[in-house]
Length: 138
Image (cartoon, rainbow, N blue to C red):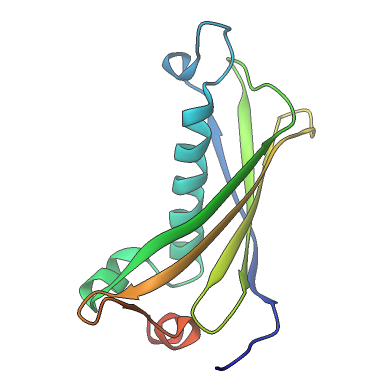
């Protein structure tokens, strides 16, 4: 089995957005399910900015599969608020990567830390693909 030392392979992507009123819950802060949507969008935009848009993977027969998702909620996010999501991509093994992300409030305070472990699945073989090989082919 091939081992890979964890290493940052992409870093420093930032994506900002404004919280919408309909994303609040009855306590008037962002409902936790919306955090995942924010993080998903930031991941897709990061991959696009890094020259590896997900639609190109799909065209080549690969699809992203989330294996583990961990969110640590630190501060409430309210309306109106502009948040910034910072994303780094870490190679965890030959077939797995981890997005480390932070949601930062407009005052600079950290609202959420997130870690998303994922793989690129070879959709024909139904097996995880070699991550760097697929990434470099994008």
